[in-house]
Length: 181
Image 1 (spheres, rainbow, N blue to C red):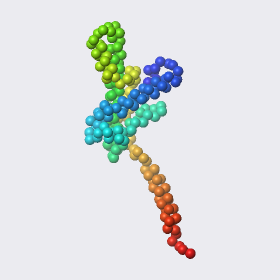
Image 2 (spheres, rainbow, N blue to C red; image 1 turned 60 degrees about the horizontal axis):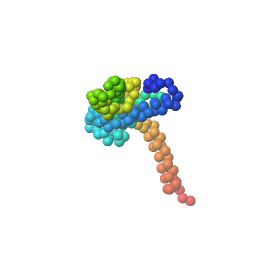
Image 3 (tube, rainbow, N blue to C red; image 1 turned 90 degrees about the horizontal axis):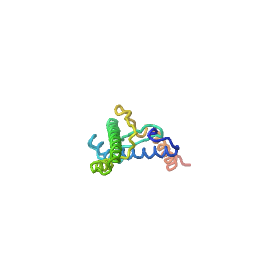
Image 4 (cartoon, one colour; image 1 turned 120 degrees about the vertical axis):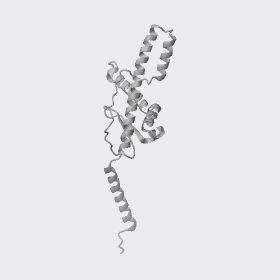
């Protein structure tokens, strides 16, 4: 995205990048995107997808990561892969719409009274996602994903040890060591 913005101050560039990232995040979590994911994977509703099954991560200077929480690694991989694929398709359609809208507006400049062009511009504006046409998007990995637990096993072991020690200390305080003087 950095190449799409003319060279200006860093502040303006970062504002532009943040605005474009927010637009993309809106596309990723939109009803249209999640409905297509739901349709593609089946037996899951948009409400369930929004309710914690899907999580989006955007590291500071890295690519986006699409995560899915599911009972099995295979199901999580299926959900995350479908979401990333549908998101990519939605953004590409948005870019195509932006390019067509720019061309229609340019044509409208030469003939502002053309009703067909006015209707086409209105139609494209309604379908527009507001995405910059210079944006390039490509998924890096859609299969053979690295399925991991949401919380690592070490965290469960550590929490269990802490709870055991706390309960042991409480039991000793309440019941004593069993000796009375």
